[in-house]
Image (cartoon, rainbow, N blue to C red; front, side, top):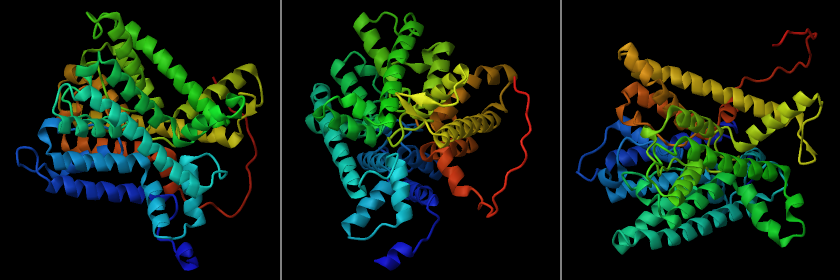
Amino acid sequence: MASFQRKTFLPTPLVPVAGFAAIIFLGSLMLRMLSTSTGAHIPWIDALFMATSATCVTGLSLYDIGTQFSPWAQGTLLLLIQVGGLGIMLLSTVLLMAVGQGISFASRFLIQDTYTYGPRAHLRTFVVRVMLFTLVIETAGAALLVAAFVDRMPWSQAVFHAIFHSVSAFCNAGFSLFSDSLVGYRDSVLVTLVMAALIVLGGLGFLVLHETFRAPRQKRPWPRLSLHSKLALTTTIFLIGAGTVFFLCCEWNTTLARQPLSTKILASFFQSITVRTAGFNSLDFSQMKDLTLLGTILLMFVGASPGSTGGGIKTTTVAVLVALSRARFRGSPCVHAFRRTISDETQRRAFSVFVLSATVVVIGTAFLVGSELSPLPLAESRARFMEILFETTSAFGTVGLSLGATARLSFWGKVTVIALMFIGRLGPLVLAMAIQPRKDSGHYEYAEEPVMIG
């Protein structure tokens, strides 16, 4: 047992990187071998793209999986979505526990840093609860969706569609078996609310779910929540409310035109939730105003909460940066939120995540502009720039929304989007930790010198 714990094949930060890469490779092999509904086999680069999109729970697709993929290929995508949503590190831990193996201290702290903010939680209990939450929520969601789907399709097909969409929604994947995503169900209160609930629960993070479900059993539940949960919940609620009003105002006379008021509110509410990481759509984004697309890009960049199935820079990162900005404007040396002080280390990590993420989006946009727009005339390439920026942010935020650029990607465009989805799922900070050079043993500081700002 002891020898197993001391033996390490990879540096700890590289474990999730290698794990996700291995799952994507195996998934691409399976998709390459499985035939489509017409009996043909998809190209290798397309198989790699689809496997990456499923494992990284993004939802960008080169095919209409509901009509062009066979049931076995759809099942493979579903498996990759579930594995990617829970995280390869968590599943590896479950397997180690199942065979009675020990877990190294390095792996233990990596898992806890991924799924919770500190070492307080007992790892074995925490993993069991994560699996239980996932099973219960996805099962409940599937059961409710069956009631909505069974009116439009046979019972067996309705059950598979319900399971697929429940897992895809909770894992914030955005894959749909319907050609128009959920446009056909935008006036269905049941489908909209169930899918929205699954997306929000999956996007909050397992720690927040655990504390939230436990809170009602305690006196004064809100003060007993951790600062992390308070920031995640308040930021999520604010973004959902502000996003609903934003979509309602911007699209009132365009994609929401000629719709009853109830459908307008319901569709705006759903889009406000799904654009941050899930990728389902009940409105046609290709017909939306540029202002709406710009707001959508910002929401996609923010994403879900830490330790969740979603991507983006995370809600708590934005909350910490807002608290930092407020403290600086007030001239306060300390950064506070909910009567707690946010540590300097947390502030530095939030700023690092923001800068690295913005850098990845800019570089990814530049690569896509070079590969997709360079051969086009100047006027046409400028007209499609918003489309490229939208695609880049959607891939990095693991959202999966597209204005149509995915289906037209060149070989190098597909490679770029694959890299964006991979980086976006693992997080720029995790990758930076994985490839950072060894620190010098010497400890010293240079002399300070002021720099003019502004």
